[in-house]
Image 1 (cartoon, rainbow over the protein chains, first blue to last red):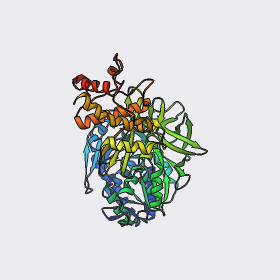
Image 2: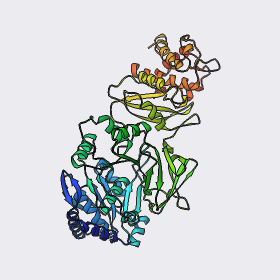
Image 3: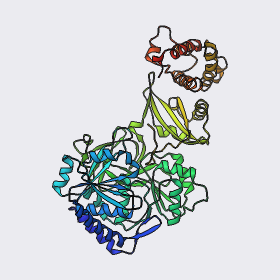
Image 4: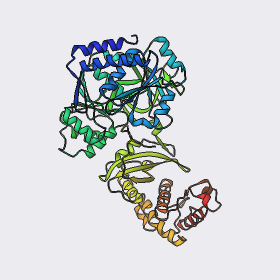
Length: 450
Length: 102
């Protein structure tokens, strides 16, 4: 597939049902016919600004009619796309430099836009490879929770090829961010299947619930942390969320308690665990059951295997590499995901990131396992568990609990210790507890442990 | 902050820590109970947990931020972790030594 093939195919799809709604934005509906017109308009505008195949072009904004049209037009040009969400604004300067950006398109909240020529110097070999082969590219940045963000380069044509196979489309709330592999996946999946993207005003629980209710959203792709907040903050009966047919969750480990509560709260929705990494894309997945944490992952583009309890993936859609770090693939193309799993036939259960595992005197502790037990205490809103270096034991378990009415850390620790006794092994029980009032999730709705 | 005051502060923390392992032993604890070693009143895990409680309470109620388990503490000829009394002495020593505070 050459650079504009995918766009030609996609525009062909749009022309099948031009009156169909592609996006609900600011409570207004936009049709696929309108999208096709905007894409052509952006094509001319970018041409006039001097954007050519192989240019690295950042699009800074959020999902909107203009940002999506601009991304598609850039894809058609064979540019290298760099979506940047507003939430990561304080890192944009360094992202622009790492990605050797030629142009940045800034899309404001009212969907007005401006194109700036930046011309950061550089001729990174991965970007040159895309240019020489005439391929469109995609650069995403790892969230960098445990180190500097890494620039991840994909051949976008390879990443998108799977979307040509028709699948069922939904009215989908684009909860995952604009610059997240899950967000990119949801966007192109929905467009390819002529679904409808519903954009919430922001990603607070109230706003997401209101959007689901007002626009009959069927699919909520989200994270376990957000589901926790949703279950906690959603005032029973305040919003009618009965339109939800499918709730997908990924990006971090789901606790049994959260899944159990969520399946009870949404008895008409199917729950589906998803799995993907910026480095390889989103795998096809199938949960063993609505209330099961075991999931089958793979699909035609992926091979998986478990080595020393850790999942490895070999993918046809693997990234070309990092812009600012060595390749993580072995000689045969396998990626060590760093995700610890237990296997039951074709199904895996994800236990957590190896980097999150706490080593107490040689014994392994999975934060999610401890969090699950502490979260059973009714006064605990949320809990994050991590390891802290300790001279005697190597590491000790420390917990940060979010409470509506904070109490002394030592008193809270006593309650936690009593509750954990008999439920966890002694080395898994937190040695230190901090109590906070603020939320423990970051702007990507992932739990902050470090 | 003096030795007796510190012992008084730490004794309920010790009782709580030991109580989680051996409720019967918790009531018989006093300022001279052995914290570490063969005749210690608790396991090393509980000892670590107790010491962290002491650090938390010292920071909370006295504004004193100290790391009690350190190379310095472990290399002392007379272990500060023998009893609550020796631990109180060590806290007083640390709180007067700016280099020993975090």
